[in-house]
Image (cartoon, rainbow, N blue to C red; front, top):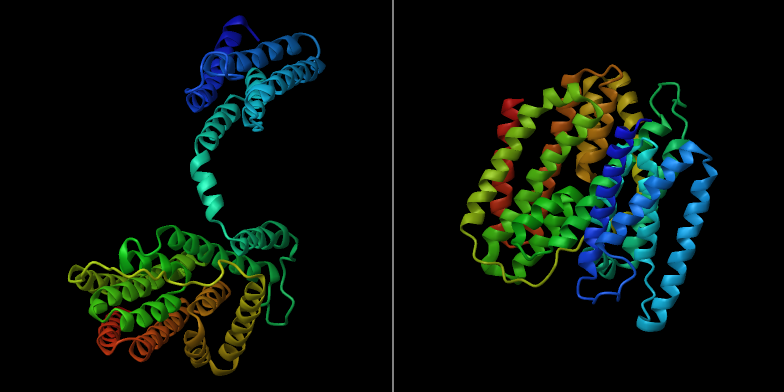
Length: 414
């Protein structure tokens, strides 16, 4: 490696150190000179120290890097122990950041410039987001932490070990493919849950409906319909919230189809796009006439992830896949439509996923698209009934008529 290249790499090393030091220095800016272990300049020196030792190690022995790292660790431990006597600050974040800065400096001169530059940016963001991350952690419930770990369990641990082959004579039940769909649904619901938890009802029922539709438009319909009897003057706003959740369900269906089978997405797009646009538009008109929402109740959604529910969904999806295949064999297209009606009463996701998968295995895209539209239509009708029975009559009529218009328009396009 020539001298010019060394200067270039050491320049990048210094920039990495100064970037991390900028955040650390800003964080401790209120402390006087000599009252902090390391600041802007020191982090730049840490990175340069790692880079220079890296150059030296390449010229002599790579084991020198281990010696240098241990030496720096010892110095930092001594400085940290001395600071404890003065300030009783037990945080080791700055010490760990110092060691990482040294390591990034060394890795840079070994040629990993893209890796170290990206890592430095991520580390700086992580250090700077301390108040935000701690705020989220303080708000995190025990069951939400467990849900996060369980979601990682089914996606990172369980999914890779499942066999990627079919176990039935009809070549339908593939554990890996089915569990991929379970993870997909769980992930979307998980993100939607935390989105609505962060937003709450501070911005009104409409935004709540948009985010809640990612989790469960039926749950949003139940909750907002119930609130219509508590806040009788808010029918327009609550109706708009329910309708935005239903419109988001149409969009969510399109997203799922596009992930599983892009060809089927092209077939379904005109009808579902019309359904969503009509529903969003009429919801917008209702939102324009709503009064400011003064309710204090939050929309209650289920646990962001339950392992038992994921297993049940996987079993239900496998049954829908198998029944769809068998009914198609013995009853033709009518079999797919029959199972679509039954599935639409319970949940749109299983029939959406199963038809998307089966259309890749020989089922005509037109039949799969019609089955999904039937399920979506039945589910929309069910939510109209829920709004009418659970909620105020005026709200039920607004929701029912809007969804009827949207479904009819979509089916006409189809």
